[in-house]
Length: 256
Image 1: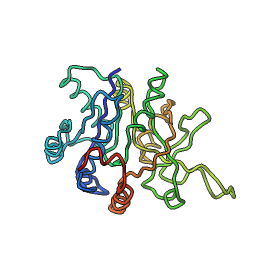
Image 2: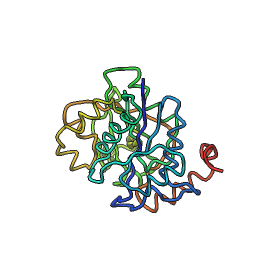
Image 3: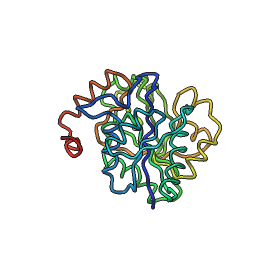
Image 4: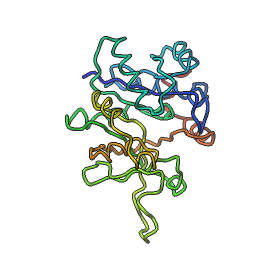
Protein backbone atom coordinates (compact mmCIF):
# COMPACT_ATOMS: atom_id res chain seq x y z
CA UNK A 1 0.00 0.00 0.00
CA UNK A 2 1.33 3.43 -0.95
CA UNK A 3 1.02 5.59 2.17
CA UNK A 4 2.45 9.09 1.87
CA UNK A 5 2.68 11.92 4.39
CA UNK A 6 1.99 15.53 3.46
CA UNK A 7 2.81 18.42 5.78
CA UNK A 8 0.88 21.59 4.90
CA UNK A 9 2.87 24.66 5.92
CA UNK A 10 2.38 28.35 5.19
CA UNK A 11 4.13 31.42 6.49
CA UNK A 12 0.97 33.54 6.68
CA UNK A 13 -0.59 32.04 9.81
CA UNK A 14 -2.91 34.62 11.36
CA UNK A 15 -2.04 33.57 14.91
CA UNK A 16 1.71 33.09 14.39
CA UNK A 17 3.15 34.53 11.15
CA UNK A 18 6.30 32.76 9.97
CA UNK A 19 5.56 29.70 12.11
CA UNK A 20 6.99 27.00 9.77
CA UNK A 21 10.50 28.44 10.04
CA UNK A 22 10.39 29.22 13.78
CA UNK A 23 13.64 27.94 15.27
CA UNK A 24 13.60 25.01 17.70
CA UNK A 25 17.12 24.06 18.77
CA UNK A 26 18.63 25.06 15.45
CA UNK A 27 16.04 23.45 13.16
CA UNK A 28 12.94 25.16 11.74
CA UNK A 29 9.69 23.77 13.11
CA UNK A 30 8.59 22.33 9.76
CA UNK A 31 11.95 20.56 9.54
CA UNK A 32 11.34 18.81 12.86
CA UNK A 33 7.94 17.67 11.62
CA UNK A 34 9.30 16.41 8.29
CA UNK A 35 12.39 14.64 9.63
CA UNK A 36 10.44 12.91 12.39
CA UNK A 37 7.54 11.93 10.14
CA UNK A 38 9.94 10.45 7.58
CA UNK A 39 11.26 8.07 10.24
CA UNK A 40 8.01 6.10 9.99
CA UNK A 41 8.84 3.00 7.93
CA UNK A 42 5.20 2.47 6.95
CA UNK A 43 5.34 5.60 4.80
CA UNK A 44 6.56 5.49 1.21
CA UNK A 45 7.51 9.18 1.25
CA UNK A 46 7.13 12.45 3.16
CA UNK A 47 6.48 15.84 1.55
CA UNK A 48 6.03 19.46 2.63
CA UNK A 49 3.22 21.33 0.86
CA UNK A 50 3.61 25.10 0.86
CA UNK A 51 2.79 28.27 -1.04
CA UNK A 52 5.93 30.05 0.17
CA UNK A 53 9.22 30.03 -1.74
CA UNK A 54 11.19 30.51 1.48
CA UNK A 55 9.84 27.17 2.76
CA UNK A 56 10.64 25.52 -0.58
CA UNK A 57 14.17 26.88 -0.35
CA UNK A 58 14.61 25.51 3.17
CA UNK A 59 13.31 22.08 2.13
CA UNK A 60 15.71 21.93 -0.83
CA UNK A 61 18.67 22.91 1.37
CA UNK A 62 17.68 20.31 4.00
CA UNK A 63 17.13 17.52 1.47
CA UNK A 64 13.40 17.30 2.19
CA UNK A 65 10.70 16.64 -0.40
CA UNK A 66 8.43 19.61 -1.07
CA UNK A 67 5.86 20.80 -3.57
CA UNK A 68 4.52 24.27 -4.27
CA UNK A 69 0.77 24.80 -3.98
CA UNK A 70 -1.58 27.69 -4.69
CA UNK A 71 -1.70 30.53 -2.19
CA UNK A 72 -5.51 30.60 -2.23
CA UNK A 73 -6.18 27.65 0.08
CA UNK A 74 -8.24 28.35 3.19
CA UNK A 75 -8.16 24.77 4.50
CA UNK A 76 -5.21 22.47 5.05
CA UNK A 77 -7.16 19.65 3.44
CA UNK A 78 -7.42 21.39 0.06
CA UNK A 79 -3.70 22.24 0.10
CA UNK A 80 -2.98 18.61 0.97
CA UNK A 81 -5.18 17.34 -1.85
CA UNK A 82 -3.52 19.61 -4.41
CA UNK A 83 -0.10 18.47 -3.21
CA UNK A 84 -1.16 14.81 -3.38
CA UNK A 85 -2.15 15.12 -7.05
CA UNK A 86 1.15 16.87 -7.82
CA UNK A 87 3.15 14.19 -5.99
CA UNK A 88 1.34 11.47 -7.92
CA UNK A 89 2.45 13.14 -11.16
CA UNK A 90 6.03 13.51 -9.92
CA UNK A 91 6.36 9.93 -8.70
CA UNK A 92 4.10 8.18 -11.19
CA UNK A 93 2.41 6.37 -8.29
CA UNK A 94 -1.17 6.70 -7.11
CA UNK A 95 -1.47 7.19 -3.36
CA UNK A 96 -3.65 4.84 -1.34
CA UNK A 97 -3.53 6.72 1.97
CA UNK A 98 -2.47 10.31 2.65
CA UNK A 99 -1.38 11.18 6.18
CA UNK A 100 -1.87 14.89 6.76
CA UNK A 101 0.58 15.95 9.46
CA UNK A 102 0.13 19.54 10.56
CA UNK A 103 3.30 21.59 10.30
CA UNK A 104 2.90 22.84 13.87
CA UNK A 105 3.28 19.38 15.47
CA UNK A 106 7.07 19.31 16.00
CA UNK A 107 6.90 16.48 18.56
CA UNK A 108 5.32 13.96 16.22
CA UNK A 109 6.89 10.48 16.42
CA UNK A 110 7.01 7.55 13.98
CA UNK A 111 4.99 5.50 16.46
CA UNK A 112 2.20 8.08 16.34
CA UNK A 113 2.06 7.82 12.54
CA UNK A 114 1.86 4.03 12.80
CA UNK A 115 -0.89 4.27 15.43
CA UNK A 116 -2.91 6.57 13.19
CA UNK A 117 -2.53 4.25 10.20
CA UNK A 118 -3.32 1.01 12.04
CA UNK A 119 -7.16 1.17 11.95
CA UNK A 120 -7.13 2.10 8.28
CA UNK A 121 -4.78 -0.72 7.34
CA UNK A 122 -6.87 -3.21 9.34
CA UNK A 123 -10.36 -2.12 8.29
CA UNK A 124 -11.21 -0.98 4.75
CA UNK A 125 -14.38 0.74 6.01
CA UNK A 126 -12.33 3.33 7.96
CA UNK A 127 -11.86 6.39 5.74
CA UNK A 128 -10.31 8.90 8.12
CA UNK A 129 -8.49 8.67 11.47
CA UNK A 130 -7.47 11.25 14.07
CA UNK A 131 -5.21 10.83 17.05
CA UNK A 132 -6.21 12.03 20.49
CA UNK A 133 -4.25 12.58 23.68
CA UNK A 134 -4.97 13.48 27.28
CA UNK A 135 -5.03 17.12 28.28
CA UNK A 136 -2.77 17.46 31.28
CA UNK A 137 -4.29 20.49 33.00
CA UNK A 138 -7.54 22.39 33.37
CA UNK A 139 -5.77 25.36 31.77
CA UNK A 140 -5.23 23.30 28.60
CA UNK A 141 -8.85 22.11 28.81
CA UNK A 142 -10.02 25.73 28.77
CA UNK A 143 -7.60 26.81 26.01
CA UNK A 144 -9.48 27.54 22.74
CA UNK A 145 -6.35 26.71 20.75
CA UNK A 146 -6.73 23.08 21.87
CA UNK A 147 -9.45 21.18 19.99
CA UNK A 148 -11.27 18.92 22.42
CA UNK A 149 -13.01 15.69 21.41
CA UNK A 150 -15.46 13.22 22.92
CA UNK A 151 -15.88 9.70 21.54
CA UNK A 152 -18.40 6.88 21.56
CA UNK A 153 -17.82 3.33 22.83
CA UNK A 154 -16.42 2.28 19.45
CA UNK A 155 -13.79 4.99 19.53
CA UNK A 156 -15.47 7.15 16.90
CA UNK A 157 -15.76 10.89 17.43
CA UNK A 158 -19.06 12.25 18.71
CA UNK A 159 -18.08 15.93 18.69
CA UNK A 160 -15.12 18.30 18.41
CA UNK A 161 -15.00 21.72 20.04
CA UNK A 162 -12.63 24.48 21.05
CA UNK A 163 -14.77 24.80 24.18
CA UNK A 164 -14.30 22.41 27.13
CA UNK A 165 -16.20 19.18 26.45
CA UNK A 166 -17.61 17.27 28.22
CA UNK A 167 -18.87 19.68 30.84
CA UNK A 168 -17.07 19.90 34.17
CA UNK A 169 -19.88 21.98 35.68
CA UNK A 170 -22.23 19.19 36.73
CA UNK A 171 -20.43 18.24 39.92
CA UNK A 172 -18.54 15.30 38.43
CA UNK A 173 -14.98 15.44 39.77
CA UNK A 174 -13.35 13.57 36.89
CA UNK A 175 -14.28 13.90 33.23
CA UNK A 176 -12.25 12.72 30.23
CA UNK A 177 -10.18 15.62 28.89
CA UNK A 178 -9.06 14.65 25.39
CA UNK A 179 -7.56 16.76 22.63
CA UNK A 180 -7.27 16.21 18.92
CA UNK A 181 -3.71 15.62 17.70
CA UNK A 182 -3.47 16.74 14.10
CA UNK A 183 -2.06 13.64 12.46
CA UNK A 184 -4.87 12.67 10.13
CA UNK A 185 -4.75 9.81 7.60
CA UNK A 186 -7.31 9.93 4.78
CA UNK A 187 -7.96 7.36 2.14
CA UNK A 188 -7.01 9.04 -1.13
CA UNK A 189 -10.46 9.26 -2.68
CA UNK A 190 -12.07 10.18 0.62
CA UNK A 191 -9.79 13.21 0.91
CA UNK A 192 -10.98 14.39 -2.49
CA UNK A 193 -14.61 13.71 -1.54
CA UNK A 194 -14.18 15.52 1.77
CA UNK A 195 -13.09 18.64 -0.07
CA UNK A 196 -16.18 18.40 -2.28
CA UNK A 197 -18.53 18.22 0.73
CA UNK A 198 -20.32 21.43 1.59
CA UNK A 199 -18.89 23.22 4.62
CA UNK A 200 -21.17 22.54 7.56
CA UNK A 201 -22.60 24.98 10.13
CA UNK A 202 -20.89 23.36 13.13
CA UNK A 203 -17.59 23.13 11.26
CA UNK A 204 -17.73 26.91 10.84
CA UNK A 205 -18.89 27.58 14.40
CA UNK A 206 -16.23 25.35 15.98
CA UNK A 207 -13.53 26.04 13.36
CA UNK A 208 -12.80 22.30 13.20
CA UNK A 209 -12.68 20.61 9.78
CA UNK A 210 -13.64 17.18 11.14
CA UNK A 211 -17.09 18.45 12.11
CA UNK A 212 -17.93 18.45 8.40
CA UNK A 213 -17.61 14.67 8.38
CA UNK A 214 -19.77 14.21 11.47
CA UNK A 215 -22.47 16.55 10.19
CA UNK A 216 -22.62 14.57 6.97
CA UNK A 217 -23.37 11.48 9.05
CA UNK A 218 -19.99 9.80 8.60
CA UNK A 219 -17.33 8.53 11.00
CA UNK A 220 -13.98 9.75 12.28
CA UNK A 221 -12.06 6.98 14.06
CA UNK A 222 -10.11 8.30 17.06
CA UNK A 223 -6.95 6.59 18.30
CA UNK A 224 -5.51 7.40 21.75
CA UNK A 225 -1.79 7.99 22.11
CA UNK A 226 0.26 8.48 25.24
CA UNK A 227 3.04 10.64 23.78
CA UNK A 228 3.27 14.15 25.19
CA UNK A 229 2.76 16.55 22.31
CA UNK A 230 2.03 20.23 21.85
CA UNK A 231 0.82 21.97 18.72
CA UNK A 232 2.39 25.39 18.32
CA UNK A 233 -0.15 28.19 17.90
CA UNK A 234 1.56 31.01 19.81
CA UNK A 235 4.99 32.27 20.82
CA UNK A 236 4.24 30.88 24.28
CA UNK A 237 3.66 27.42 22.81
CA UNK A 238 6.98 27.70 20.98
CA UNK A 239 8.80 28.44 24.23
CA UNK A 240 7.15 25.43 25.88
CA UNK A 241 8.05 23.12 22.99
CA UNK A 242 11.68 24.23 23.14
CA UNK A 243 11.76 23.13 26.78
CA UNK A 244 9.94 19.86 26.08
CA UNK A 245 12.31 18.99 23.21
CA UNK A 246 15.50 19.85 25.05
CA UNK A 247 16.23 16.21 25.90
CA UNK A 248 14.16 14.63 23.12
CA UNK A 249 15.75 11.37 21.97
CA UNK A 250 14.53 11.52 18.38
CA UNK A 251 16.04 14.96 17.82
CA UNK A 252 19.53 13.52 18.06
CA UNK A 253 18.86 11.34 15.01
CA UNK A 254 18.54 14.31 12.64
CA UNK A 255 20.52 17.10 14.33
CA UNK A 256 24.15 17.40 15.30
